[in-house]
Length: 230
Image (tube, rainbow, N blue to C red):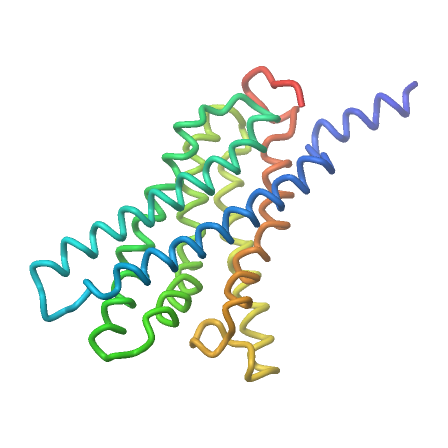
């Protein structure tokens, strides 16, 4: 009985749950595939109107596409992540989804939209520019962790660790991709030489790391509010 009690205490502190871990990976994978694919279609449909020669129209259309892209990112990724997190703690759905929209809007405005506009101006392939910009926007991943931590702050005393976990996961994946690109010239999503599949895999590769971190941050022993049944 003592050993059983010790095991429950350890699980309560580490937060490990195999089912939730794989649900996090699965939900994030689905979200990244949907977001990248629909975002690609959004850019493809709107690229004809992103003509820098039409300055008045360009600004309006660029802002519209960036806003739609951010809402898509925040809505899909945020909703699917919330389905997992809510099984551990009662996090408001609206607050969690909103915390995803802000960083996504910055990614679109600062990285993705300028890349698309530049491609239009230089007559380069817009689809390639979008995928490259999407992979480069990984650098804003830690900003997503910062935004989400403000929601987690209300439910766990380990909320600050979520910022570091996101930063570490993005840095580790970026470093691995960079090292692999040095070994193989066919793999380099950061310079546009990689394939579409590699861009998807680069995003998905962060999910096992963030999944384990989330379970620890939302471990029962770290929660400051009553837990919800899993």
